[in-house]
Length: 80
Image (tube, rainbow, N blue to C red; front, top):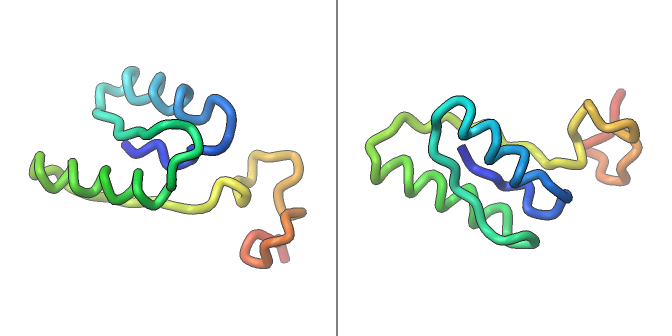
């Protein structure tokens, strides 16, 4: 598991809890780190462990569970 949402408060902590609960390794960096670097390091760790890599990456600003979802200025995040 990769904690790529390095800018949202408590995002890394939340993923760390879930990783512990399901018994998987988590790759994380410091708050404010480059999310792409976290994803890259996670892929490198998975390859080194000869694990299966499955990725699901999307910007945090597009998460549908946010009350302001679809209002972000990025056109990729707008709802139809």
